[in-house]
Every structure is written in C-alpha cells, then in structure tokens.
Amino acid sequence: MPREYSNYINGEWVSSDSDETFEVVNPADTDEVVAYFQSSTKRDTESAIEAAVAAQDEWADTPGPERGAVLKQVGNALAARKEEATETLVKEEGKTRSEASGEVQRAIDIFHYYAGKASDLGGVVKSASGRNKNLSTKREPLGTVALITPWNYPIAIPAWKLAPALASGNTLVHKPASAAPNVSQILFECFEEAGLPAGVANFVTGSGSEVGAPLSDHDDIDAVSFTGSTAVGTAVAQSAADDLKRVQCEMGGKNPTIVMPSADIGEATDIVGVGAFGTTGQSCTACSRAVVHEDVYDEFVDSITDYANSLDVGAGLEDPDMGPHVSRSELDETLEYVDVGRKGGATLAAGGSELSGGEYDDGHYVEPTVLTDVTSDMRIAQEEIFGPVLSVLKVGSFEEAVEVANDVRYGLSASIVTQDISEANTFIDDIEAGVAKVNEKTTGLELHVPFGGYKDSSTNTYREQGDAGIDFFTSTKTVYVNY
Ligand code: NAD
Image 1 (cartoon, rainbow, N blue to C red):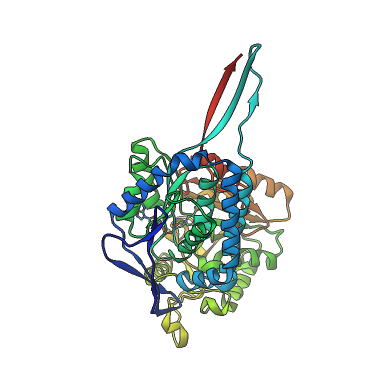
Image 2: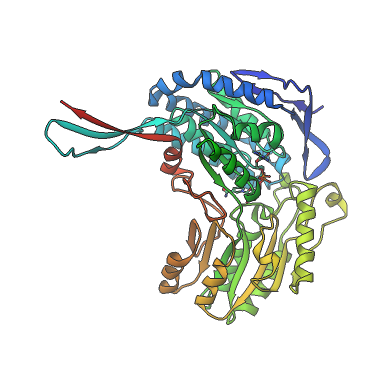
C-alpha cells in the first residue's frame, strides 16, 4: 500500500483540512502509485505562512555558524539516505538512476556549500568621507519567503532555493510540484532530523491555485522565488509585484548549440546528444536547437541521427540511456510538436513516435527525436518543447548562426562547438543567454556560480546559486557611524 504523506507545518506532520489527497504515479509503470500527498487548501497555506512568520525573529537572530551547522546536518542526513532518495526520485519523476543519483548528490553538495556560506555572511567596509566616521554595509534576511518549484529537478531546485534562504536567516514555505513532491518531502524529514526549529521551514503540497497563488500574493510573504514555465512565472511575478515583493522567476528555454566547421563532429554529436536527450529532454537548459554550419550539416545530421537511434530507452531504475516522460500530458505535448514540425515542413530524421510493446506499454515512453530542415520561423524552432526533440537548422556563416540562435523569446543557456578562438569569444559576447558555454553541452551547472536566464527565460531580477543565492535572500543595510 503506498504511503500517505503529510504537510510539514510548524514542526508537525499534519493533514490538510480538505481531507483529500492526490496520487503520484510512476511514469515508468503507471499502475504503480508511488505515494499520496495532501491536496492542501488556501487555509493550510495560510497556517504555514503564520508558522513561518512566528519563527522569523528567532531564526534571523540565530548566529550564522549555528544556522550553518544545521544545514550541514541536513546535507549529512540526506547523504545517509542517498540511495533511498535516488530510487524515490526515479520512481516519481522517471529519470535514469545515474541522473537521479547525480541530482541527489547535487542537493547534498548544495546544503554543504551554503552551510559554509552561513558562517561567512558579511558586508563591506568603505572609506567614509570625513574623520571619525565609519561607513559599512550589512546583510539582513528578507523575512518570510515562498519557494515554488517544478517537477523536473525535484530535489536540486528545492535545495538551491531552501539552502540559501535558510543560510541567510529567512523562514519559508515551500510548495513542490504535484508530479514529484516525494524527494522534497525527504528533504523536510532531513530538516526535522537535523533539528531545524519548528516553523522555520514549512512544506505544503497541492495545486497552483490553492497553494502557489495564495503564497505569491500573501501580504506576509516578503519574497517569492519561483522556477517553472514562463506562463505561470509571469503570473507569479505580476502578483508578487503588486505589493512590491522581491521576486525571482526562472522559466522556460529554447537552448541552441551552434556547430561550426572546425568542430570535431563526434564531439559535437555527444555535446548536442547529451544536451538534447539527457533527462528525456526535460531540462530547462536542454538543447532544443542544433544550429549547424552548412559545411558540416550533412555529416552532423547523419551522426546525430545515429546517436538518437542508438539510445536505449527504458525504466529509470534499470539505468538506461533515457527514461520515460514524467506524465501522459507531457508525452502528448511532445508528440503534438513532432506533428506540428512535420506539417510545418521539417523532416523527421529519427524517432518521433511513442514507444509501445512490452514494458513500454506500462509507461510514458517516446523515441529520441531529430527533426531536420528546420527553419527559424517554424513553431518547433520557437516554442519550448519539454521533451527529447532536437530541431536541426542549417546556416551559412557564423554571423547567421548567432542571429538564428538569438532569434527566440528565450535566453537561458547556449553553447558553441568550435576550435576557432575568435568565434568562441564573439559567441560569448553576442549570445543572448544567461549561460554561455564553449565546447560543452547546454545542460549541467556548477553550484557555486550564478544561474539564470535572459529575455523571457527569467524576470532577470536576481540570479540563483553561488553568492547570487545569498544576494536574493538578503537586503543590504548601509550603516553610517559618527564618533
Ligand atoms: P509550471 O509552471 O507548470 O509549475 C511550476 C510550479 O508552479 C509548480 O509547483 C506549480 O504547481 C506551481 N503553480 C502552478 N500554477 C501556479 C500559480 N497560479 N501560482 C503559483 N504557482 C503556481 O512548470 P512545470 O511544468 O512544473 O516545470 C516545467 C517548466 O519549468 C518548463 O517550462 C521549464 O523550462 C521550467 N524550468 C525552468 C528552470 C530554470 O531554472 N529556468 C528549471 C527547471 C524548469
């Protein structure tokens, strides 16, 4: 019998006052209910906010090194449960075992990283413009913050919001995505085990309308950190801005990799292939467009087609090359885009169909897909496709490649494969993306540097991760002292 999980409010595991739950289903085997979670109401959300507000002063006054010690314990507690968290993540979201294990490790590392940061918070001292004066800044927590996260990195993204929020002395309410709340739940069990005081971090599951929206527009919430689609993020940003809350939304992408004639085509294929088909294409930074110079276009198309056809697709627990889509609706959307692409004039070079027969009949499986002869005006070259679908576009020059790469509303991650140092540096200067990579896949991030998008990929207010994570969750007070 699958377990029923509770909300975590004011240090207690509590049921929703709706008396209703929703189920989380294994995308590799839809007959398997992984767990039940609370269908929370607006009232539950408000209770969580009240608890977080009540715990605020005490947590803000707790010395940074003490807060850091708790975060370190959280990282240790998660490390002790790494195998369990990995399997849970595979079962609820569908990632392969290797991908899930890497993600859980990332969450552990993030807690350890911000444990150090909590001991090291500070401001700056500047020269005052007169004698017997001191001029300095100090950082203070914002207060009570709302953290709203998507399903596709269900432990790493919560970790990269929760850890800096707590390190800098905020209290919080976290709402995970309903498709994959199970590993966030594990994080909150680790908070409890690590001795995080009651009310400091609260966990409420449920819908966007009953939990997400009331969080983003509640008067007692001082800041909202959201990751998800551009459509929902835009609404969240507008609602948060109504009463001048600090807000940060990291959203969709349509990430390109440019392949130039100097590239080794084997290397370019690996870079594009892992970027496009890793995590079943369900990364905000996934490579969705290969923008390929005409001199190497045919060779690249042959090579990436072979790559896509060679991938072993299966249940994540068996650690294949690619797992299933998270849900039927995501799979349907991917198939719909393949159809839109073909009707729009693209050529289907690999994949394009739902997989069926044997274990495939149990889950949401799709073939890794390559569409060629794509032009920049096509919908499949413009809209985010959150699945393993790569569009290949042909260009005649480096300048055209950058123009095509920039010709979308999104600007999250972008890469180029080239041996030409001038192309590499011009690309870094001219690409409209928050992450620019040379000879590397568009996916994959380091935890100690800023992450965020340009254009409609982000509210472009603050970055996440590294020091930027602390910047978002703190205010700067400027101090003038005369003596
Ligand atoms: P989504 O926008 O549907 O949902 C994100 C979260 O918002 C969920 O917890 C959801 O329940 C909640 N929500 C829904 N309606 C709400 C409302 N009215 N008010 C407040 N919250 C609400 O996104 P998703 O399907 O979970 O995730 C996929 C999307 O996330 C993709 O577009 C992907 O590119 C994006 N993403 C971006 C990044 C990034 O860092 N830029 C990272 C991962 C995913």
